Length: 115
Image (cartoon, rainbow, N blue to C red; front, top):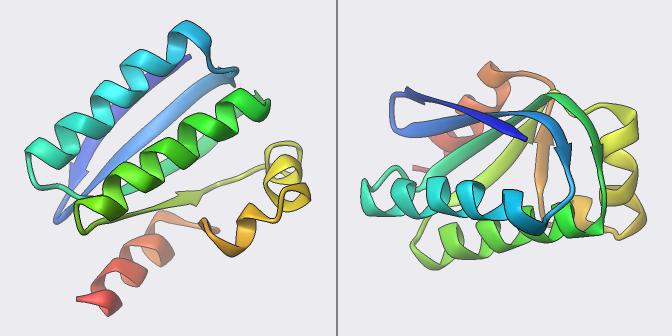
């Protein structure tokens, strides 16, 4: 998995590429989340446009990130989620916990409304 990071105002966008399968790839992802907390960029948008597949370990990575960010007073949401990636989120009913938006603008607007 490749992670491309960009800063957009008060939040961080992490564009994920490849497959989210947990294991060794979880460490760089977790490091990006810890860096966001350390830099007080506590609101993170995961751009899932280039994620081909996600298993339960990948979903666990995302839930761990969500927990870390919320513990620090922030939040996490996802954009550009394909049906194939959305499926495990819906099956586990985590779509009631993780906010999913169609676009970066929608997600950014959701953080603005919270402040």
